[in-house]
Image 1 (spheres, rainbow, N blue to C red):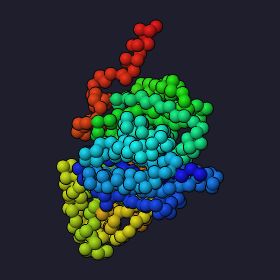
Image 2: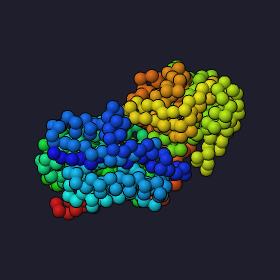
Image 3: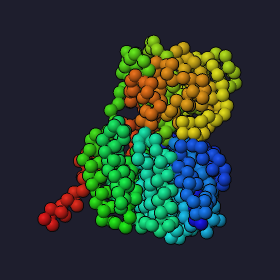
Length: 497
């Protein structure tokens, strides 16, 4: 029987968000509690469990250790990160007699001091487990590092953006781990780094040019020699030394094929780099578009995307709506403006300062006269079945604007964050989501118009507006005349000819 260690550590860190992530921001499950918390979800862990449980019962035994996940946010405080890493590694040492390990990671964690937590974790786990198989699933927004590649036998990335293949990614990882345990495969990996940061609608894999690159990866995985392949575009808001895009291909004992295919996909991405930039609309123009649209207009406030690591307390769009006559109803969220509302109670009318406290250099609070419509205190369920923990929640109404105020930042991507609190997006003229594109599966069926808004924020798709200091340089599009990563290789080829 193969005993498989299971662990999770996930958060997408935005280093431009000044509000730090604490230990308390993580939802943590231990031991068999992980199975109870994740088995009925559509997450990577659920996908892996599905494969393991459907394998012969006398072949696989799951050894769940620690699962820790947090809403995206600012850098993780050193004490918190050390506690998380130590917890997982201590469990690994106690269970070092396992036959292999599956780690569910994001890949874009960043601590105040440690800029490569996943690389650190995988390296230490490799020291504990020796040559036993280690597989990790990662987000395609991961920051790929040498330590991660060297320590893991195979890295298995998402294939979709918006991410709708969490469950499938977990299944892919689990199947590969079983093949490794059975000694059916010998992974060989190639990586092509690309000095480019990308955003924009062409990254939508179902419709954009990026989908063609992912299609190439899927063809590789479906081939006889292919094991795993992906384009890791990185989270451009995790400003650490390894931030750039990468192609990674793993084959079964065929390093030349891995290199050839990785380079082919890398050239495709580089040749299309100009397409991977966001087209944004000013807030004023977006409001005009909404005013003239028959039906729901969806504003994508990617600059304050809690899914990308922003603070979630931008009031830029709220201020613009309050500052003009707007005939339609609007629905938006803000964190963490709830204390005054809870003190006042439901049905009261109060004037409350609405946010800008977590990111004060970008936003300042604005006093708004509101009615406290409803109050909540407790978790809700996201679309994938995982739990959202907003803390206390107040539904506030300022004339024609409904405001979901949460004590803690939450993902404002799907509709459930609103519906769980009595707000139905299809009933509004404007809904503001805090996501660059992840909202599309949930809103495209009901939205008459989708407008990516050029608002300020720590996760702005206007990359040149952000204070990069640590990422790979020179890099497109921050710098002019970035040299192709293939110039030296092409020069060598021409000289050989």
